Image 1: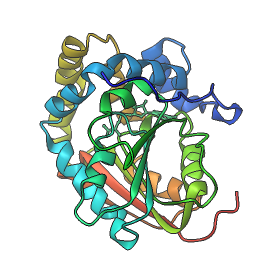
Image 2: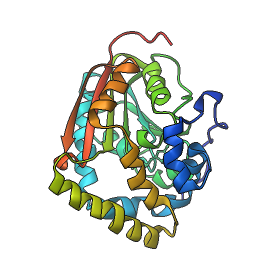
Image 3: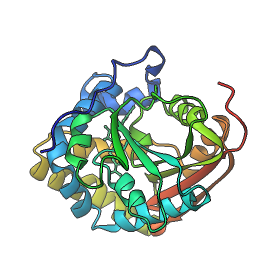
Image 4: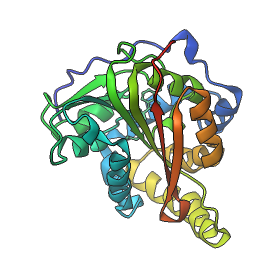
Length: 268
Ligand SMILES: C[S@@+](CC[C@H](N)C(=O)[O-])C[C@H]1O[C@@H](n2cnc3c(N)ncnc32)[C@H](O)[C@@H]1O
């Protein structure tokens, strides 16, 4: 494993109190533990098996989704810029961005579960992809300092969605894009039935067997079920100050890619 030279995030910021609805999701999984603490501990626990499970359980479709999400980031507008891979986990998205032909900028991979970042080290040179132990609700970056941000399968886990969206907007330069790749609920009843069976029965079983973690892969489908619909998420992005917000469903709506632009200077 890579050396643990990544500084962890400070304790939960005062503004990071989870909303009641997000607590409901976590409470069932964590039996009363706050969502922030539960999520941070859970991802730290499953870090050694995360990559394997991720690709196996998604049947490798996640790679194509990440590629599409990166295109939506429109990094070619500022190829030498600095981009944020938020809730970066084992740094797959950041590493993919760094390897894009023509990209000569930098990526910061931020996550509050430091073991996830540690297991991701080595996927790209550290001077191009810098792992940072940080909470999405209190990012250690100046206002309007980044050229774009992307979050893959992470925003659903953030204890306060609206505060998280506002925090991303704060650190983005005007016109910089924010891309969200997240699981969703397929609109077709037939697809939804198969998806439901897989997500609620196969995935928790395989996840538990391989990761050895009791609740992580039960939490996943539950957190998706509690996450806002595509339209609602687009509205929440607008509410947080993003403009030109749009979304695309991928793989029959199993996941969705939302894009917004921080078109006006941050005032927060
Ligand atoms: C499902 S993983 C996704 C990892 C990676 N983006 C990927 O595509 O595989 C979700 C990640 O979000 C991180 N996370 C959740 N809430 C966070 C927060 N408030 N601040 C920083 N990271 C957070 C977790 O620690 C975890 O590594």
